[in-house]
Length: 171
Image (cartoon, rainbow, N blue to C red; front, top):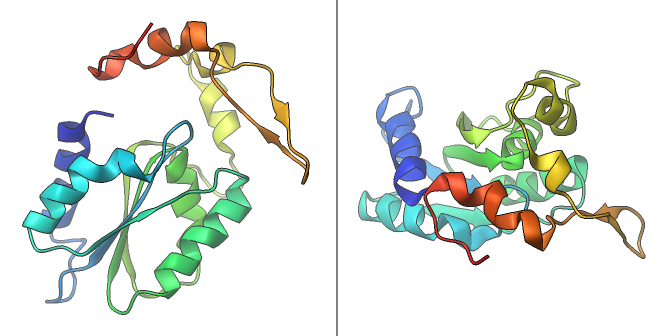
């Protein structure tokens, strides 16, 4: 995701009026997707903070949708006042689940993200529409000692998988 595109999407949603029902500015909680970390939001955070927004970039554990959503939900619980949840890619499914039961969440913002219907999974959505290449770029899963698996992109396929976002990646 380019920093400009993400910043534009988040700021546009905030300024639309639907995200700000109160006079108080919401805290913006940013949830990264798979194959990323919280630092991927650094450029967006800089712009939001210049606009007077408090921000929190969740270090999404990337263990399962339910576990990751509980983690993000715990962050939301710790925030007094209105919250806007922002998810990128897989983070969209996380925020959809994390938002449940929180009256302080004023809106959800999906940045090039999965926005599943109830009961729908990101893996289903990834294969639902033509043109997706993530599945064929994945390396064999790594089994984790505590159960479950970790997914990685094959190094030889990394550049082609992400080159479309305008960033330079090593080959």
